[in-house]
Image 1 (cartoon, rainbow, N blue to C red):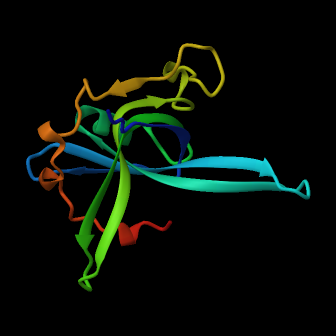
Image 2: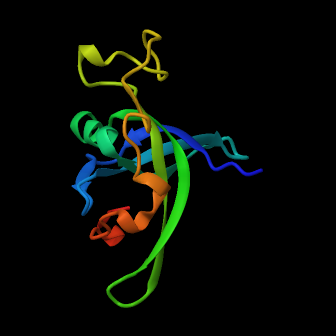
Length: 155
């Protein structure tokens, strides 16, 4: 038995970027920051930020591009996937992403958004799942528009 599942809550480091694949499917990318805070042996507070690349497809990709903005908090659930490519110098490069299956908007966005697990009035924010529209059938990344370059990401 195997399991490939990621569940994170974090804040967007920049506005989501909406693109369309050659077949016309919406695809949105964004980076989500999670923080770890602890006290070291000397009692000093330490903090580490981890950045996660998130990829969303279909209708939920369009909703993410429309409603999520830099600084907003979101819950993302999906599977971890690593892909490789050659950069312009012919070097093999790798990136690991969370292929989102469920996105829940947790804060901000006006009165109709509600509040999510981060605190507030219990009901949760808007939630979108792969059942609304997920990645292309079979999850074959060769269908994706890979014209973007991870070297353009500032972190």
